[in-house]
Length: 379
Image 1: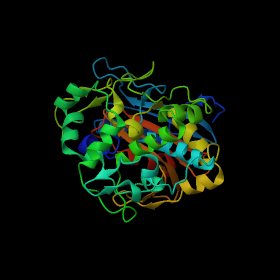
Image 2: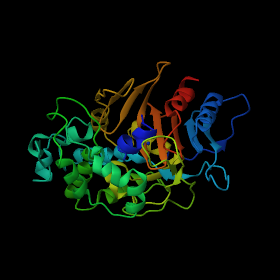
Image 3: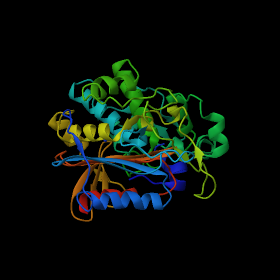
Image 4: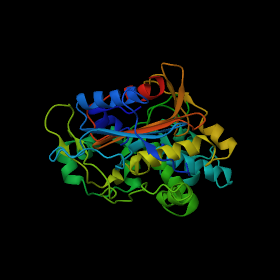
């Protein structure tokens, strides 16, 4: 679900740039459970990913594993307790809050963007009066993605710009304005294209409805009720939690060249489209609770799972901040992926929320995340 390497930096991080009762962890016996998953993680490291951390929760309990290193200089291993940037998985949290507000009668998915954010989406053919909240959430709005702007890519994704601007704070309105400098991708509702601007706008809608920053709504409505102790919205904070590995990027259009430590930076340029921090256990708890109906009434969960074709994303369709993916063995999983500087993450679960997987690569230029998902669910 996450495009890595060059695409991660300029299009996907650009494209980024998911239970309440704890179960004791157990180690998989040699040659036993999750062997294929472990092998896929090792293959990712052999492919160039510095390190991988993964957690699975299923009917047998909780399995946690790591491969590779969390620090290239010291050789310190990755930890199963690592916190990391989850990139576009932030979108699933944001969409959940929007749907909660709809269930409470505070807004409608059929509201226009302009009704909440008057005059913000306009220019070069964009018209917020013709775009609905639903179209923001399922990426059928046609709104240009600000992360696809060449100047922004140079400014934030590539080496010189990143080190110059790593602590800069980007206001969401500024990011929307970048998008408005371009023509829409298509007329609202006529096609599909992944746009980070959609979720910057969704975060602003939450702020307008609740009177508070979207991150506070995510905290009060999801993080605190589910006891996601290692999950937070940075709100400009450049550092990760107490337990984390280092994050590495090539900060280039190719996967060649040196790797740079990009652990510390202000992720406001990703905002409601991809700035959150979490860990594998919290993501499993969140996605499981979501699919089990613990966060949304049945009507809203049904709307979230009402998907549209997502051209370019193999064997997958896109709902409201939630991706449905059919695996090679016939199993369907739901979740989202996320890429941001030095971090590539996947969080998926089965439709009943009973078999969840979350894992993270602490590098953004290599590794086959799809192979890890296939290994866990299809063996």
